[in-house]
Structures are given as structure tokens and as C-alpha cells.
Length: 360
Image 1 (cartoon, rainbow, N blue to C red):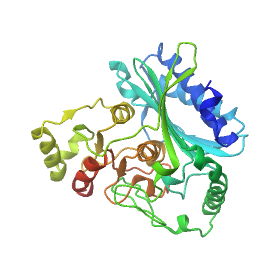
Image 2: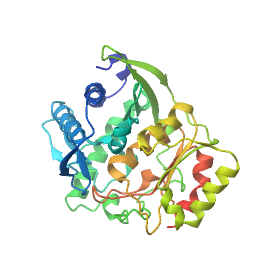
Image 3: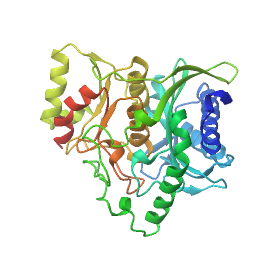
């Protein structure tokens, strides 16, 4: 359980959702200590082969969310269609075990959560999330979330209610701005924004003004110790995590970017798991995770379950994110299967990555 003092000033419903997330992460940490890495013989809705532990953790999260009075719907990378749940207030989307394919090597893995006010996220932008979180399971279990600042929480109720109403209208054939916005990419080659937009690397939402990022450490008794509040990402860095490197064979801009960072003696920090690689930027206060694509190496990361929540955390910490065309948080979710290119972290390196992100 999360200490109530860490949930002060939040709407009671949002506090309940975040407390539920903290509790289930503690349970997942216990499960992973003895879980195997064998395949279940099944695949998820996207055709990915599932490990037994993927299925187990996915089921556990759904069960815990169903018991939360503030959760009215949930969907996961394993079961992407939003399921109606008994509660009322928020819809939670999640990647139950990001990086499960590297569990056999005993590498760190993670869980990602996006918390959306009201009903379905479809037809909405990532900046409409009320909060986002991820957990990383390594030598320690760490939970990081972006939540409304105390001074902003009092204003959030009306805005969230409006966002939920608009999303309901969009999902049911309404004519709100998000529904009329250009479609987001379903192939991963870019992304379109709707409504007010920010720069190519930062959402108009200016999350760092309204949200703060907190980092917690799981204790032996299942409680959480606050490590830091107000986590901040510096704009300059010399650390990089280059994902989807096979794209550099066709994407000349990506190949040139990697060569530049090598020649400038940047520090490589890449594990093959998105959550631990992004967390390195949070932990060190600088860095970049870069995942461009090419024709033969298209984008694979899911906008709804991976990119939007992690971009929310990074931008709330003062960092940047981009698809090459706009901030990840300005992309409209059109289907749960939307894929996206993504680069996020220290703003200077994200901007430096734009040619590679735009090349395919």
C-alpha cells in the first residue's frame, strides 16, 4: 500500500487508482522473483507470442483494477479492447510486462500504466491522461509516476470531467475536435495531432507546469518509500539508448546520428527493455531513448500502452518527446493497435534526433 501522505491533494478517485497501481506492482514484484520465462503456447491480440508470466501478470492487474471503485474500464497490450469494470472515474491501460522477452537473461523488465479520465482513450491525445506510471523490476523495484501537482489538483476535476465527456462523444460518433482531428498512424510511420499543438518535441499541455514526477522504492514489508519528488530531466546529456538499430541500415540519418554520438564519446546505456532504458534517464536526470524506423524495420511500440504513458512521465519531468512530426502526447489514439516511432528524454538530444525520426 502507498502511504496516504503521498496521495494528498489528489482527487479521491485518482488517489484510489494510484494506490491500486502501487499495490499491484508490489504483488508483481513478488511474482517475478519465482516466475519462469517459458512460453505459454498462446499469442496476444497483436500476434506476439506470450510467456506464462505475461498471462499471469496481465490477469493479476485486471483483477486488481476490477476491485478498485474508481476504475470503470481497462485494457492491456495482451487484451487491448477496453473492458468495462464496475467502478466509476478512470480507464487504465497498461503493458503488463514490458521487455518480458529478455527475462530469460535476468534483465530488468517493467510495467507501464496510463490513467485516463472517464471512458475510452480512443479519439483522444496522450496529453489527456490524468496520470501515468511505470514500474521497473531489477535489483530493486522502483515505481515512478507523474501526477497532478498539489496546486493543479484542485483544478483537475472539471477538466477531467470535460475530457471524459468529449471522449464518450467521440467514441459514439460525436463531432468534438479530437474526433475530427487527422488520424494517428496505425503503421508507426509518424503521427498526427489534433487541436492545439506544441513544438515538434513538446506538447502544448506543458505538463511540467501542472504535474510532478515522484520516484518510490519498494520496501521489504510491501510499503513504498519516497525517494524523490519533483524529478527533473536536464536538457543536455551525453548518454543515449538507441533502439531499433537495424533501421540504421536504411535510415541514413539514424546511422549518421549514431556515428556522431560514438565519435563524441557519448555513453551507451541500452538493455533492450524500454522501461529500464527510459528509467535510466529518470534516474540520472538526463539521457535519451531513441527509436526511429525504416521501411524494413518499422515502428513496433504501441502508442496507447507504451509510448503515450512514458512520454507523459518524461514531459512531466521537463523532458521532451517526439514522433518526428509532433510530441508523442499530441498524437490522437485511433485504435489500440496504433504503433509509433518515439524519441524521448533530454530536450537537446531529442531535437538532435529529429532528422532521424523524420527520415522514414
